[in-house]
Amino acid sequence: MIISGEVKNLIQLYFRPKLLLVLTLGFASGLPLLLTGSTLTIRLREAGIDLAAIGLFSLVGIPYSLKFIWAPLLDRLPLPILTRVFGRRRGWMLAVHFLLIIAISVMGLIPPTDTSIWWIAFVAIAVASLSATQDIAIDAYRIEILDEQEYGAGAAMAVYGFRVGMLMSTVGTLYLAEYLDWGLAYVLTALTLCVGIIAILLAPSPKNEPKVTISGSLSSIFGETYWAPLAEFSRRDGWIVLLLFVLLYKFGDALLSQMMGALFVDLNYDKSTIANMGKLFGFWAMMVGIFVGGLLVGALGLGRTLLIAGVLQGLSNLAFWRLAVVGQQHLAAGEGADASLLGWVVGIEAFAGGLGQTAFIAFLMRLCDPRHTAAQFALLTSIMAFSPKVLVAPAGYLASELGWANFSLATAAAAIPGILLLIWLLISYPDTWRTRVTSIKEPGLEV
Image (cartoon, rainbow, N blue to C red; front, top):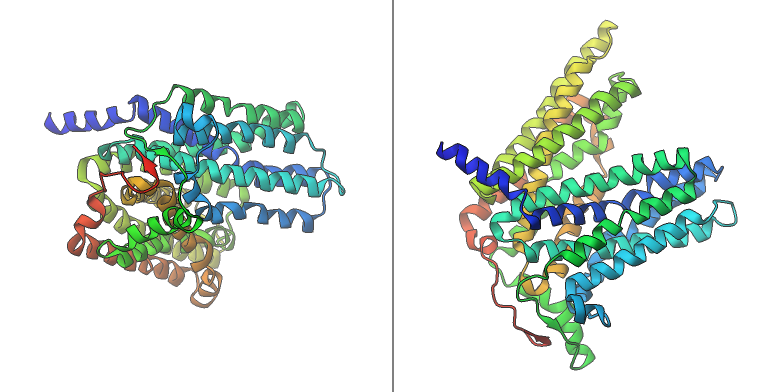
């Protein structure tokens, strides 16, 4: 009865008003991403735009990788009227929401032609920049309004909302375009952000939110805005170990994900099987993993949950070794690919990945000093993203040289450094990330 009561209390966390607010803001974060990505690619190709030009639209996503550059400004820079009326975080979120609705609508209303493609690209970059800025503000706001015991559930709800937003910007927009037209589809999709505006208007400001004032010399303002967040972080014991852990915790998972599609093709799975078993089943398994991850953070704490998730992520990669071995045996015997095995393997990996993602985001939330929430969280997430974007570059070479079975074993081994770094943190530097600074007074801020 005690255990069931604890579980009940943890589940009830998900239904607190603050957590439902986090879910709504997560939706707003996820919505713009694919409107400048895969959805836009479909629209451009349907209009007959050249493939080379479409390929260049991958550069539109650069602002998401560079957002740490202007993230410190959102900790310091006030907006006329909005900051005074709604506070620092809510003011920025409201401004960006309105601008995103306008920019997404404009992008949808420009008919794609060989001459207008540059205007679409310009507006798409504006949408991506606004979306990245919105992510900065929402991430910081989420950290500041939640209590530490709510971080696990908060991270899970943020991911849930983000995924729903991505679903709306792909499946929802495509359905609207099919039955209406592309321009109206983009406008209607943009207007769903009004849900976020209503939520922000009803939402509370973070407790003890400082009032931002810009004063002093240019060098002092620059120091308080950019240097102070880095200086604070570098004064923590074990900060280098922390950064290495952030970089490598998801490395094995990212290495496998980079080549997963190619593995499925080489094992002779057809597109419908990959979509149904490999993607759809994996999606729901990840949703379950995200939910369980939030519960475990509340029940066991961040350290234990990260350790469990790290081990499961490594072990789940071993399931792909089994998939590769069985798949190659079937190929050699001239037999069809085993669809049920694919579903189980992808489901196990997705569950472990979802569990780890929730715990990892909650961990990054706890690392942030309240005085520099936006700057530090943006920097940490940029470091986290470096692994799946850059460190996995040799993945194809490794798969080619090792073969799929040995490559799967190598990705499982790649999870070990992150686990060892976590154990080092838990044993040697427990206070570095368990305790957040409580004082928010600093030069240039009025409380």
